Length: 197
Image (cartoon, rainbow, N blue to C red; front, side, top):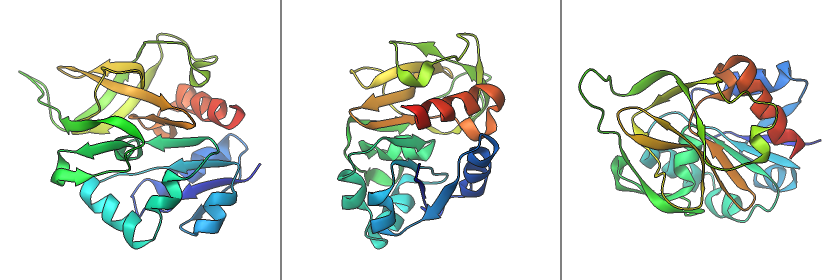
């Protein structure tokens, strides 16, 4: 299987490629449009600000490439947020693959922002990404902005003072707000499920 990890300039690119290697998958880190189009699976990771990441994708000529992908695509962390129409972070126009707008987490008394730590998921519906993952599993999150839980795209939600979408899917595009590469066994299982989907 050919697997392309989009080089969006994020800090977590190396850890994503290493996690894939640990589960026996060979991935190429690339910003080449033809390589991305030709891959059987594509991962869009990201750490940082939405406006900066969209600027980097535009400068690399990848916005329309990503929008046109027909193979399975998995967004990770900021990659999930970029799949929505827009973000309050920098008032960014995003990829527009999923209806809705990402907004700042409001937190609450005693809650730290950005949200950094381990949370469980509440599955809203069955999905191939959930295969062989224990319903009580924990996943590692680092984020200050959150995707909406309303609407058909939300597959699983989590909470940090308020509910937010932890996994979303629309057609061939799926994404997780947490970092599967840092979420030990359950995260590795989710990556395997994506590769097998």
